[in-house]
Length: 540
Image (cartoon, rainbow, N blue to C red):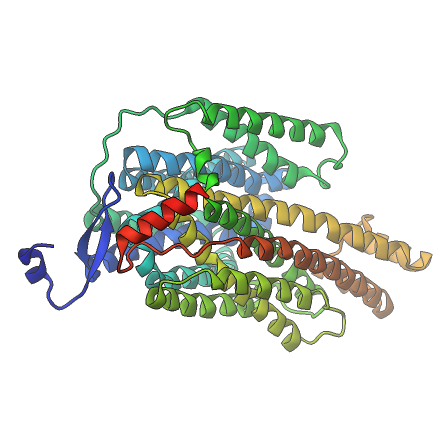
């Protein structure tokens, strides 16, 4: 750093900022990074809030647009587009510049939001949600890859708390904001609310963010991108439709499974033969990268499973209000936020991280095991304590998995590392919801079969002919006390099965965490030694 640079900001220690090509770093003042972080945090809030806000407004939306039979596609179109575009955004950022690709993804997301708000039919809404999802695929990847370029891994823990706080705020506040907008404004504002937030984020990124320009003559691997997209879309459709739209053994699901396998085999073949693969398969020779990808998949599995099924238990068994569904998950988010803050600061001070995934996977498994004991007699205080344990486990893991993935690659692959980590967590969430949903419904149905015929008949009538699987808080008031009690026992049995399997699956993450190696984080005292250790770890 020159004397001139030192005199420019003597009152603040500098932050190291990544260069595009050689992986070197130049120093920038903390205040510059903090300003950029404001734009990144707002963008992450956009990505996290959207589905949560829209989900609350869906009954009103489908009522006005007369499309209840297509309601699931409003979410599916968004999810498919997001999952398919995530790895492509990461590679585009690495090849042509992270700032430019990030701004384009925000612009596409805002365009999709505006068009969704103007939709006059369900078909239009589904199509515009797909546009919105294409942009959303680049939001989280852009946030994480830009932070990876701005701040060295050793210093990144200082900023982890902000992102954990945004995640908690979005999960808690999303349904509440969606309910307020739907009740007091109009459902279209659940999409329009993204526009002012996005404009602020764009302004901060355009004005404040300064990254070295990247010029690349490499061509995008279009064939690899197409094969990966087909494989991901097939997998997401399997998890979305399996057991709901079509039976797991149906020709549709089996056909999608075959298409997914064939696409991924073709993808692996192509990626080994192109100059700039969408996801360089060589990254998986790095043990740390492979292990945190597995852990990230299981974190998504556990988190989305919990977020999906815990509110059902709390509303139906514990009698909580549906309008406060965001607040029901506050204990879990509180545990995740506090631990994430503590771990981030500890990593910044010590540069050590290996112990945290080990602790986190064990605690996450313990939280799932505790939640598997939920019954009709479990108090709200006890279930909240169990949720804190699960959230604490995820707090040890959420940001650390991204940190280790980014520290395992060169700067030129930062976008790929960020998109891969995000993709594995997304796919894990899709599989978690699908598998847990199947286990839950099967257990509920088994409980139904054990009930007396007269109880079954009453439930069939109250559930519109669909029995327990169609019950919701609105129909509970129609049930006599003994029938309601039997139904609540069925729900509790379903929760027991879901979280018991969640605890079992967490064991895979525990094993994966034990195989992590302590590679010095970039930004430590001896950067040359860190580079040598990373190269050795990749060779092993």
